Length: 394
Image (cartoon, rainbow, N blue to C red):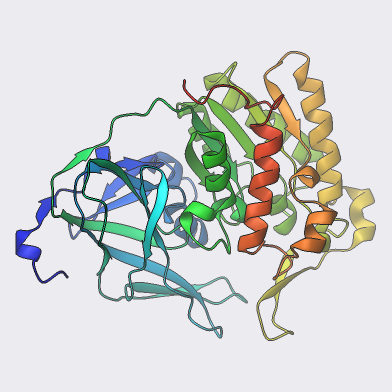
């Protein structure tokens, strides 16, 4: 903590300082824990892995106006580590001043959840809270955003600064609501503002609400209802990879499940521009069904598909099958829904992108891959003629 902490002004961490969240929870220590799904939805899947990724605040940020040159944020992180692998680096806090990255830091310590990849079980090891400290900020009145680490649960405890902090007014930007899997969540991105959805949102001049949940884009009805009930000017859903990874359903169930998912969202957003994105290229799952399994044979964590390609004829799903089915479903619906659009995931990350930016673990892109995905998505979605094209102000 800063030596002159007694001279700093403490501002209560309240929900009106947050953007990109859908719910908050008051913790036993009096802190504020952002959530990306409301409590009724969270209760419908009492699964430890899902609870972990849902509470990781990808896209969640504090936004305020201040003349402060020094800002401190006390948090209790919960980090994720894998049994037998090196401890992960501390999550990154990105501080933006008037939309531009001005500082980055991390919070050491905190809780660590150790996950056994072979069984999926986890063990929580408790640790102390810490402080994200930002100094040398410009002294004029400015808008400050502190983007929370996309890959570690972050309980917000206290906010201090050397000048008053006030909630920032709504800037009038369109609100983009996006749902997807771990790549949308930000797996292996360098920082919270460099996940591909955050980069694409910046390029498109929109406010992001990121409902990317690692391992949990499974057409869950509670997710569809959340998308239905959340105000949005633009909606996108990236469907398919987790369904193949988990070997969660067969072709007979997949098509009606997609229709039901889209029907539910349309109940709340009947004419909102709506983009359905099919899976990005993932060579290990293109023509081989799941389930996916961890592979440590190289000494690092990689993934392999364990299904039998011959079973595609019996309805086992692969990424190739899902792309064809999604294109068919959207084309069938678009006649009655002119604001529903389809984007082939291979245009977002395809063979040429893979050759230039391969997937280090066979599933997730590296930081440069996130930038490529963001650029491709922004060009097709926000660019001229794209379904999200138009003025950035609503």
